[in-house]
Image (cartoon, rainbow, N blue to C red; front, side, top):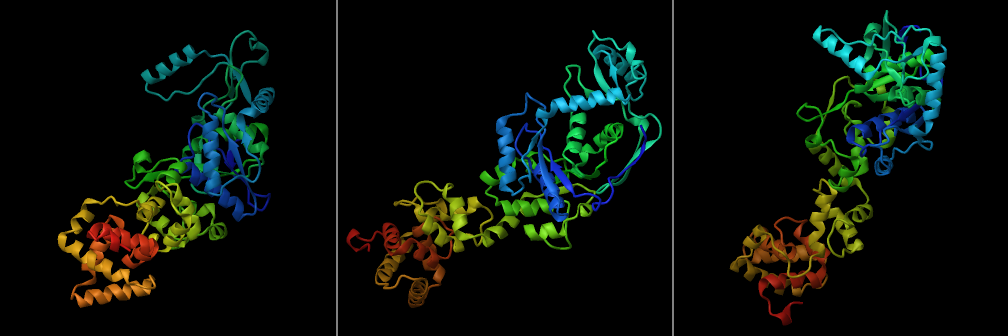
Amino acid sequence: MASGSASGGSTGKKPVVTRFAPSPTGFLHIGGARTALFNWLYARHHGGKYLLRVEDTDRVRSTVEAIDAIFDGLSWLGLEGDEPPVFQFARSQRHAEVAAELLRHGHAYRCYLTTEELAERRQKAQEERRPFRIESEWRDADPSTWPEDKPYVVRMKAPREGESVIEDLVQGTVTVQNSEIDDFVILRSDGTPTYMLAVVVDDNDMGVTHVIRGDDHLNNAFRQLVILRGMDWDIPEYAHVPLIHGADGAKMSKRHGALGVDTYRDELGILPEALFNYLLRLGWGHGDEEIIDRDQAVTWFDIADVGKSPSRFDLAKLQNLNGHYLREADDARLAGLVMHRLEGDADPDLLTRAMPVLKVRAKDLNDLAEGAAFLFAKRPLAMTEKAQGLLTDEARGRLAAIHERLSGESEWNLEGLEANLKAMAEELELGLGKLAQPLRAALTGQTTSPGIFDVLVLLGREESLARIAAQADVPAGSQV
């Protein structure tokens, strides 16, 4: 087996094919989503294909629920594969066939070392304070001496001299001394393939030209080169992307936001276009551009522009970006997304009409739901402590006067209501806030809301006057 440089050549030699290959042992986490995004973008930018492979060889931990959740998250982000997904476990026979071929050509060998023997040698290396390397006497044994009645694993014959080099599209030139690559297992004693073998075989058979993945797989790439060269297969281009860290620079964890994509959607109320844009900017950029839509991303993206340093995930920045996309979003679409976050019956038409004033300061769908709740609240309104504090005897008296004044309002539109209340404030020689604050409390049960005139219009004449009357002790006969 030859050693030397690994580079798959230029993108012009063959159509670009990328792949995203999650293990279905949990939900689609934020790092996996970014890897999928980078693979999708690179393929789109070069007019190639983006494929999905489910690495479900861990039969104990791989679940149907996790597979469904991963596909659901990818679909939500618009990152479905261009072809039906490949399931790795279903290809186990093909993987075993490749292992047999490597054995026939002398690039791999049966190793009969027992677990106990390996443990003893590992312990001895620790005692002698030297790195442990597999030195199996079976490596160069004549195949005719292989016993047929003893369990064995199949190991690759890793090169022992020279060095291997990968020209990584993100990391640059990466060199490893071949003496550091052990004779790794490709087939277990039960005949099942290891991850290291399955990945290489699947990438080759799927025609993958570019392997874009986290840099925690960089060491694996040098082992996978051994298999590729043993099979005389084309070596793909590698791009190992730095992992995502928390805002404090520490390794990403749940406290930093290392959550499933579904959590951002269902619990945090993030829009898919916002998460798409945010993940895109985690480690990649185009000048000072912050707001980048899908078409721009496809045009501008190049894996070579991904930085070598870990990017930092900042939930506040994601929420700020999400606020931008909320303000740009279609009102009817937002109403549909907010409906299930509201308690009780909500009128979708009213919710849609309210969106232009609700989304002005909202950062997520939860904010929108919270801001819209007053529209569908039943009387008597529940009051926050601060709102209750505004409803003093003096304020209730002003509410009674407001009720009387607005009862004569003929149009009940934004301009008329604003002119009427401003005139009232001038007549009473009060700032408009002295009227608006208790009025807001009476109408919404809160101290914050959209503009008070917007609130009046959205609630409508009958409901507005009824809510004001309930806090102003207006006699029942004169409420409307």
